[in-house]
Length: 247
Ligand SMILES: *Cc1c(COP(=O)(O)O)cnc(C)c1O
Image (tube, rainbow, N blue to C red; front, side, top):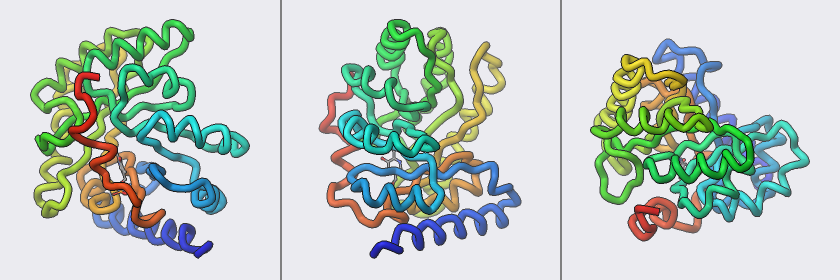
């Protein structure tokens, strides 16, 4: 059991290498983030022992619980990858170096207000709903360019790129379509040359589809299940319609 996380990591890293070879990309250009929702601390520690440094949480509460216990490993970096409610921004900006899930102006505003108070800046990605599934968060592809421009006007926020969750339980072609759409939105935004906006990070690809994501240009993949095993909570608990959308 103890070796499991380490073994799984080796497998994932190997699959990343193979995907890179197939896509003629360099493995150094792709970061592996470990999605740790519901994952107990012992497993996180195993991943750290195996050399991993980048972790992502979906809920402010879980982040707040895990962060202090992980602080002893000072090479560890946290990102926030889940739906972020405006009343939770305070916790999140305290602990993370990048927020992947900024998908509406109101959230940008709330982040800005908090960051001004703390005299800080924050790197963000704009999350896009490339699968057009009702149950997913993320700005619609049609409003993406405008949203990025609006967010870039908050001087505390550094837009670094885009994030998406590919269509789930879908064919490779359907997921590929999501990732290509994200890549094309990145190109549209680059063309606009908005001041201070960078579009270097494409956060896309999870356990089931990271190979396709690498082929389509991902620079950061987010993997949970393949490393830590099945979760006891369904993803809908983290992703979906039960949460209040405006908030
Ligand atoms: C849980 C989660 C992941 C990882 O999903 P797996 O299928 O377990 O690899 C990636 N991104 C987000 C936003 C997640 O919530």
